[in-house]
Image (cartoon, rainbow, N blue to C red):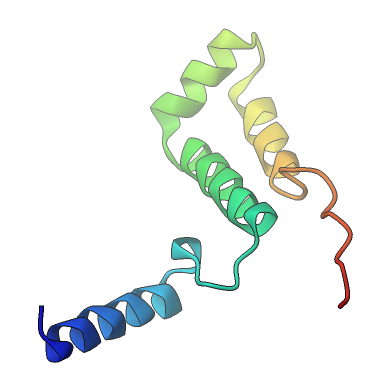
Length: 87
């Protein structure tokens, strides 16, 4: 692999990380990554009607109630953030 190839791959990765929040970056903590994954999943469930209907039947709730529950879970999907250690 040549130096120009490495530069091209790194620049493409930086472009994707700037464009899409969920792809992460080097300074992303494990908690922030998990929050991104959970929120992305809930947004996908809300956006895909058959999946939302599946969850509503499985939990014996109306589709509107399931949509509301998923939107509420998007606020704090992994609980409160952990305490930061200041060095």
